[in-house]
Length: 296
View 1: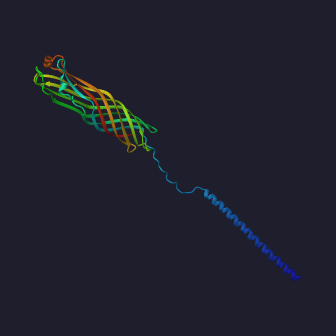
View 2 (view 1 turned 135 degrees about the horizontal axis):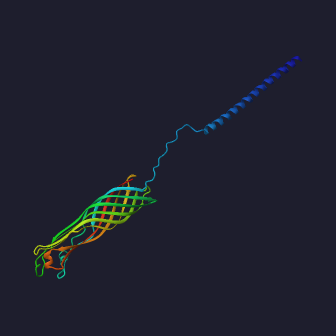
View 3 (view 1 turned 45 degrees about the vertical axis):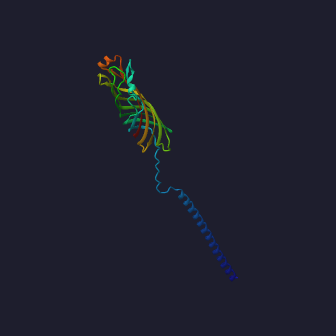
């Protein structure tokens, strides 16, 4: 019996030891699972924390170009007259005989250089560009006519005689003050086309004389004046940079006409009372020019 009781105690001790080992294993498993869960939570929280990496550099997007603003610039080009110029020596008895001797008048279609400066302001709203501009240019536009008429027929003191005619007309300077209406035609706003019109003003001189060598008869006049008229045209302009623009422009300017009444000398008044000489000059021209502007 003692042996049996000892064996029973040994068996019980072994069972207790096995139970303790199983409990330890289960506890260790629980601790491991809890540790893994805690590590996962910490990792998730760490993922939500801000990193110490530097932010990417911002990308600079320049603002779109606008035509709004003041500008000044220079221009240069050519000017071609389109008006006529005629001279008349009228005799109430013999009629309008100088025109028959010079059927072409004193000519037209002369050309010259024009150049100067301009200043203005543009305001862009959407695709439209509204503006005002004023310019002042000097010109080399001048026409000189010298000729001798064919010998006069008929009878009297002028039979076989001729008249020497000299005429000159020049436009020394020209200015305009105009409104502009433009429209941008490219997505970047840098190219615009426009129409323009307004007031034109200019100054020049004119000279006309008719001289008869045989009889000493002379008619002459040399007026100078400033004239005011109108102008209309169109152009195109492109912005090379935000400050520099280039363009081309056409203008038609009409300054009206001038009539020169040439006074006779004493011999003309004696031989041909009530005879007078006159010249009519039309101041109108087409202008083609290039422009460069600085926009503020």
